[in-house]
Amino acid sequence: MILLDKSAYYKVLDPLKKVRINNLFARSVVENHVAGKVYVDDHDMPATFYVIHPYGMSLLFGDSNNMKFNAAFRNYALNINKTRSNFEWMQAFPAEWDKVLHTLFQDNLVKSSENNEGKETGIIEINTRVNFRFNTEKYLAFRNKINPAAYQIVRTDHKIFREMRGTVVPMYFWNDADEFYNKGIGFSIFYDNQLASTAFSAYFIENKLELGIETIPEFRKMGFAELVCSAIIDYCLKNNLEPVWSCRLENKGSYHLAQKIGFEPVLEIPYYRLSK
Image 1 (cartoon, one colour):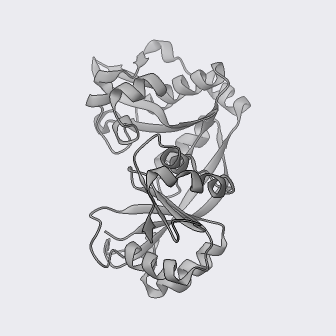
Image 2 (tube, rainbow, N blue to C red):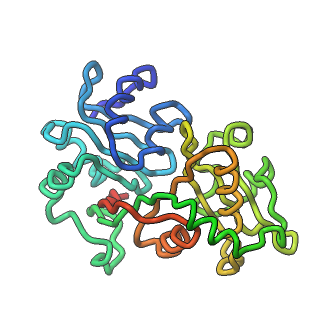
């Protein structure tokens, strides 16, 4: 595995365009929207690629039969040399990779439903990633049943960018507040003058806007996520943008919210949690 210099990221663009699963997070790295990492098998003529977004999502794609790269990747994924302190959540394309990965990791592969001890090291935990497609008619039917005007919904500004807490918040997807405010978009809801929930553009590539959503724990199950999501979807429809949603199948809250507000599941793929 060779760490590719940013000046050579252009070598990844065409192969990445052939990836037929949601890869906006990888494009945001390769197109230098955020500072991630790209590993390849060969600096001059790369054929195998591993792209890591700073949030911890990653994409493995290209030639799956590169034995030297695969051996190095096995050590990396199992964190044999303790080069990482955090998980990485990996998708692979094309599907041929899944057979290769099962051979590569063998007994180290564990389904999330079978990881009863909550083991975090020495294994690759298999989850499921769901890609959705937006259905405008279903969204509008939902939209007609709610009244966002009854709540204080505002554009997510610099102050909210810095104050919003949680695991899926703008600061983990954008370099800084200025860049987010000038190039991205988000909407936040306040309840009793307290910041409660934020929906925002996690990735904004061409005409595609992928949603990120976080509600502060004490304000969950109050319908606020639906309201801020509707605000950003309204923004998309007004500006001819395609709303995009992907999530872990095991994240039942996100999975059901997506369908409630007009998204339809269209693809399920393995989602590998690499060892700490």
